[in-house]
Structures are given as C-alpha cells and as structure tokens.
Length: 350
Picture 1 (cartoon, rainbow, N blue to C red):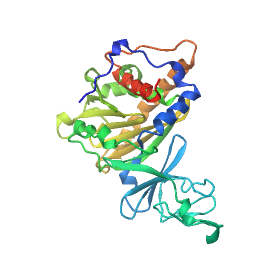
Picture 2 (picture 1 turned 60 degrees about the horizontal axis):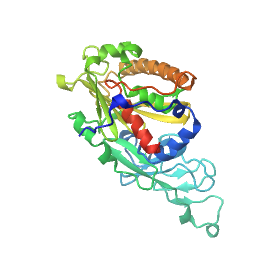
Picture 3 (picture 1 turned 180 degrees about the vertical axis):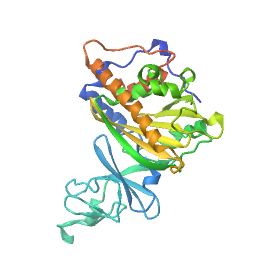
Picture 4 (picture 1 turned 45 degrees about the horizontal axis):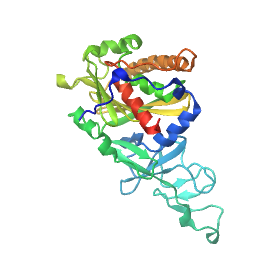
C-alpha cells in the first residue's frame, strides 16, 4: 500500500545548515544510524563457516562471522582487552585473534585465550565480544546496533512483490567500488531520490531510460523509482519478456540504495565520514556472472557516478554559501526527496 504523505506543494526543503554543521551529523548518528538496519554485504561473500565481513557504522567497527551451523553472528570488531581490531578486511578464519595483543576468540565471540594473563588473574567469561544484531534478507546481510531493532522484513518485504518475478537472493557478489565524495551524505541521497536532474546531468543515462515514464512511489520506510529501459542501448542486458525490461531504484531509509536491472543488482551504501564528506560503496551482484557484460556495466556506472560526484560536490558548495538556505519541492518530480527528508525530520524530532 503506497503511503500518503503531506502535500508536496506546501513543503520546503530542510535548512542548508543541516548539510554542514557537525552537531546535526552527531544527532543523526545517534538517532538514525545507531537505530536503523545497515547493509554490510552479501550472503555470497560469507557462505562458509569462518567467512568474515567487516564494516563500519557511525564510526563503530563491526565484524560478522558465519558460524559452524551456518548462522550469522555479529559483533563490534573490538577486542575486550584494550580495544584492538580482530580483522582489517573480509577474509576466512578459524578463530578471531586480536591484531594488537593476540587475545583469541571463537567465531561465536567467546574469549578462549587471554595472552598475558594467568587463569587466576582473569574471569575469561566476562570478556566475550560485544554482540550486535544481524539478519539476512534476499541474500543481503544487515546489522543493527540498537538493543531493540525493528523487524527488517516487516519494513521492506514489499520490495519482493514489487520486483517479482525478479529474485536476487542468490545473485553472486563480484566486486566493490568505493568513492569518497566531498558532500554531506544527505546531498547524495537527495540527488539519487529524483530523476528530475537526469536530462541535465546524465546525457547517456537519459538515452537508456524512458525519462517521460519515470515514476516515484512512496512507502513507509522506502521509496521506489522505476522506468522502462531501452533494451538496445541498455548496458545491463535484457529479460526474456518485455514487461521485465525495467530498472528499479529503491531507497531504503536511511542510506541504502538498490539498483535492480535484468540479471543484475547494484547496492549502494552511503556512509557518512564527517559533516561535509561521505563514502559511497558500490557492490555489484549478478545472476549469471559468466554471461553478464560486467565490464560494460561497470564502465557505464562509472560514467554516471562521476557525473553525480560533480553535481553533488557543487551542490555542497551551494548549500554552504551565503546565497542559499531553503528551497521548495517540485510536486511532480521531487516527492521522493520530500519523503526522505520527512523521515529525517521525524527521526531527529526537528
């Protein structure tokens, strides 16, 4: 069921200072990033016991490990001795050993060996790793740092119906590209959430999609933009049936993007670094990597991304200037941005 939101005609954008003053990002980390589900990787990256994913959420280092029983467990990537890291990168391990002083933990987070201490000097059961919540949804791995996380499936399961018969649960992760961008994380999200800029910023993308048929639909915790593809020009390949030749662009609050095309899933994780910079991680997944035109897809995505970086960094300068404070939303083209900014306002109680 599409959620009704306040009339776009009467809505103004959030104030420009929200995009560059440090206290707003500090508030967002506390009220948004430490409470919402965060995407950290793909099931195909962590299939076997001992496989490890590392991530960072609001400056908190996180580690997720596949257990012997095939379940997942998540922890802060922080040794309980003096705060050292257990892993620097995605890998496969039989145990977790601190890179600082060598304390050893089982994959389930239990401390097994405390180097430098006799048994009488330390109650080993008091120093297990600090756990975090972890779940899988359609082959993607999410963590949540709150004590009482909401049910992720209840929030986003409707996506499965919207993209049917596409099912990317078993797509294979191939590679990641990361971009440091000199803009606030919300600038990047605002930009993604509307196709209004496409004819002016993305001339090649404008040839691939049917811009006049571009649609935005609003749901409680996510929004959907979709449009038909020109299958002759598309770098993504095509589906057997014409009605499946669509591009779906989902934004899951607060900072997760799913770009879905026939046989291909690209996830974007927009990670705030400070109030004026972010890093965007592009993860590429394919239904049949052997037959996919991965190089062409990556080249096209790189072109579009460089165009987005240019405009987002330019907008950041505009937001910080003396010449702007607030704007007004286009009723026809910017209801996705309004929805996102409304969720920001609600989360921060501002």
